Length: 108
Length: 108
DNA sequence: TTTTTGAGCAATCAAATAGTTGCATATATA
DNA sequence: TATATATGCAACTATTTGATTGCTCAAAAA
Image 1: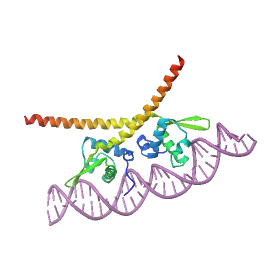
Image 2: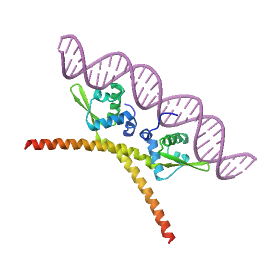
Image 3: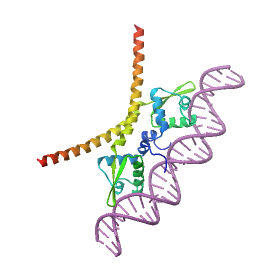
Image 4: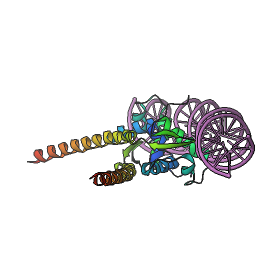
């Protein structure tokens, strides 16, 4: 309905990052999660909704409880972006290396 | 002045992520950067301000131009968080491994 | 069956965000 | 010196966000 959700936007909020870490340890219900924060259950539920929209978490209904699981795979998207950055950085230093090499041989 | 800036909040915006990648290749002026986007120079300048506030970029005045450099070091903060997550994940699987080991030895 | 509990959904609100336009200023260039 | 250019800064606006409150519904417990 709203704007397309994005992993980077999802981890922008500190509460959501904390939720991610908690869910990394074990699946939890919204109520159980809310106990760890100052915010209300509804607020936590909204964060979970954001995390679910970008598929960082998955729901598993168990009776009246809903257990939220982390989808660790999705975290790879962040790694992928960092990797792209790292490669560009390496190439930049590679070019610098080439330039320094050039200077060195000219000196001779 | 405003809310304390955060690296995660800074990379939440796609335009800012693109700026980071461009600056990874080489330092650029706001005008040069703006040419790569649909948004105005002022919009880009605002993004640069956000990036500067959390020290992801640094300014270098050169006459009337200001060259923006990436502070690659700051990107490590993101890596650090991912690493924390990775460790928790490894521990979780570590526990799972222990449980599976347990089951195995009981079977014998 | 009646009551309690776990959750989602909708409406509302204040604060933050991304973007625009207009203006001021300092440095180049003609 | 007069003009053009590169930026930053301020005011304003529309949209998004995070959070609250009140409600409904289904499952579990008394």
